Length: 284
Image (tube, rainbow, N blue to C red; front, top):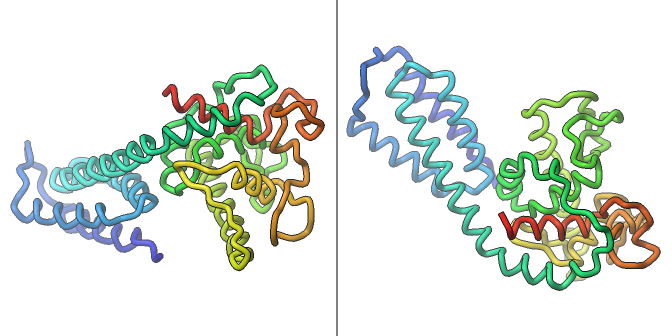
């Protein structure tokens, strides 16, 4: 699907440039033309997908910062910003409600086999709402986003010394040391894109055999998570055809099940961490 963002930003830019020299008034009363324009732009927002809607909101915020003093422009941008935020939040809240049954049932089925006496690290829940927004926009399980970040960098808020970033994407070079908010959220989006590309590749190659990985914001099966771990951390073979398994099973199992493949470390694998985050999400 083609992205709508550039064309939509052009509309906003035209609005801004058209009124950039408007004399500032003590208070602004919208005209009929303003309200008509707002209605047209809101219709675009309503028909936008979640990823575009989130991007629009971010752009409206940025445009508002550079048009201070232009009351007409500010009026339009603030209404569009608030409207896009309301639309996005409403959709996300509905999806959260729809996922409650899944989280309860999935947790009840698997959480009793968690063997590590650990809780969710609180630093993994920092910036949760922003991580949740990005995950929802990309239709990806928030709990899995956090679980991968934990497993790859223990949820540290810094750039690892190998330069591969908090999600350890070896094809990227993020540098080392401190990390900015902007770069951190870029690494999260890179993780989403990187993961989705791997999933799409697997699904396409195995379509004829009816095998796939189906991860969404509202849930994932045990098999989906197992196959994802294999794609993300490395396969136990050289092919992405058919049933796949992680090269290092403890990446997925560590701290789960009393068996050799769970490893002997005190650090959660992807699966028990995912379960812990689901449990925490139900109490939020």
